[in-house]
Image 1 (cartoon, rainbow, N blue to C red):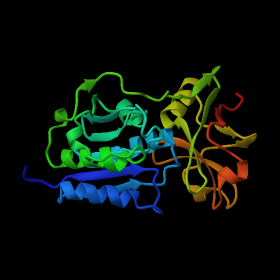
Image 2 (image 1 turned 180 degrees about the horizontal axis):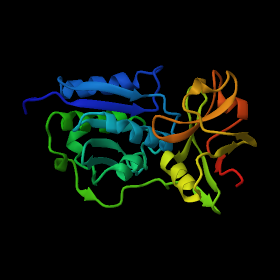
Image 3 (image 1 turned 90 degrees about the horizontal axis):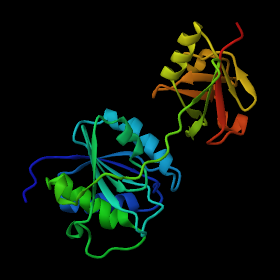
Length: 272
């Protein structure tokens, strides 16, 4: 099969950059498709944190060109009976372990069809039980990028694993309770409370402002930008993914609050 077009491959993993794993996968793909082009979304997903990878993938995917192939290797079940899958959405292709890491893009896409990758002649002939990124996912990515039809890799499945979706809860009419779902390298606390959730709370009550409660601390308003509050102060903002974020201006909210994933965050209407 001749290679007829360049294909963009976006990589996401928890491999980090100390070890050669990412470079090995790229080298193997280039051996199959010399015209492949790569973008590294990140390789700093916390080790084995499937939920974090799902969130990052969901947020990154809309900014890539149509027909991008996403190779996602966050695989705590490597070597087990978990399935390798290939998913096709209205915009993109995804190759990943079937462990819920594609939940975000499956939920946000207009339609999605997943396939159990069983065509082993596309895998490396020698496979280890510890590096399916090299032996299974990378070669499948290479052949897909080279023009192999996605239907050639296996049969459709209707039961890909999906992670539980944790949505904020409305308590009464004045409190919206969510939680911290990620902590970024700046120590900011990302939550599962979206701008739309806050807007609905305010509109229903006929209010214009709300307080934010986290770790026993009250933030009196949601800022428009980080530097709107004094250096060292705790604040809240709507981040670039339209979710509520807790921050410390020129500091680390996670350290200041002793916060961790799963901690509760509340948006509370002021007393009338």
